[in-house]
Length: 427
Ligand SMILES: Nc1nc2c(ncn2[C@@H]2O[C@H](COP(=O)(O)OP(=O)(O)OP(=O)(O)O)[C@@H](O)[C@H]2O)c(=O)[nH]1
Image (cartoon, rainbow, N blue to C red; front, side, top):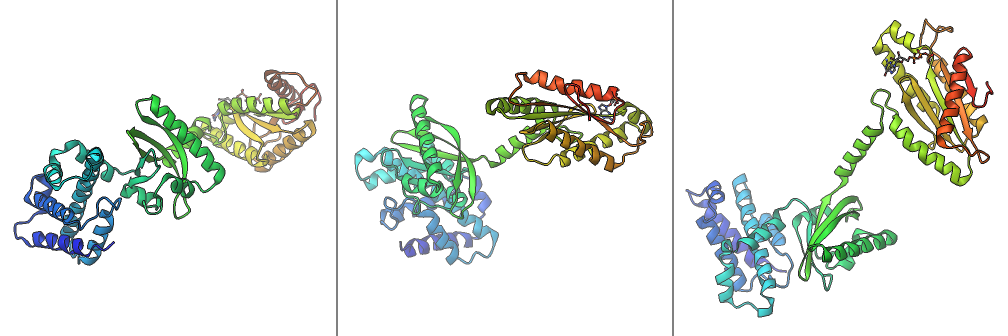
């Protein structure tokens, strides 16, 4: 579209005002009825009346138009940029109010210019439209306005273009949007279904489209997790996009914090309780094996007493990290069970496998060589109890853990620094 006429008119308007000796942009911004604003509205109206701006054909030529003006004007100082930005904001607001007015009065056919002058030329009277327009253009999140019947995307705000990289030209309707924003056909089907369900809910629920998360693909190939909600307004709806990435990350962090032992930085008892239910049920369903190793540091009370609580804390951290790095299969799980006790869950691992892992842990702690003068070896050591379920067992998860606990107790009675298997066998 050729904007040469509008560009030159708006350019000379801005330049003319800036050149006035008493012109202050701060005065303009402070006074909604400032002469500069009134003149700007007159100029917009003149350009429309002269059919130099095709408001009805183009969904949003304003950004394009002001882009050209910015390029053409030599903006030497901040005031000029601010003035142009202000004028652009007014026009966006005014222009959108005009479009909304046109929609509201669409049953009246083409608007006569007298109607325009009466209702649009002074949009300050049209509070709600102006407010709506302002929301659309100024809100810091992507928004799009869609015709519910045809699926045509009537308008998107600048933030939509900035975030997703699609203007109305690239996504003129929902069909194009689905394809571009959700390129994976399977995910696209899921999204379309979810969106349709949300629209159905909206019909019965005050026209509010409930929020759901969607992974939107942008034009540069990146993906953003967006919480999309909206509202039905007659034959149109407005979809509002909120970036959910940060919130989800914060939720992940909170979740990690809730399940992480703050001292040892491994999973805590609560996480173990959850994991035990999962793994126990899974082993049962698949008739698979599951092993547990309960680990207790020997004479830890004496360690604390001799070296101090701080040294005790450091020791707990080192032991926990060492156990965690020794147990390396992704499906294996290590947690702090209590004070100086740790637990290892080993899915699909039989008794022999668990014994092998326990011996690896024993060696790893030996190699840390933490001095403990109150233990027989002079170094920190562990006692461990192992229990395993396999397809022949009928016990529940409480007896499963109890079995390992009994074995640990047995290992302690044998003099510590050893591994015991449930049901009396020892290594
Ligand atoms: N530094 C430190 N000590 C802890 C922590 N949690 C528990 N403990 C200490 O661990 C010690 C455990 O003592 P006991 O249960 O008697 O066990 P033990 O001394 O290792 O004796 P055995 O298990 O029989 O070898 C207590 O002194 C607790 O205060 C902790 O987070 N930090």
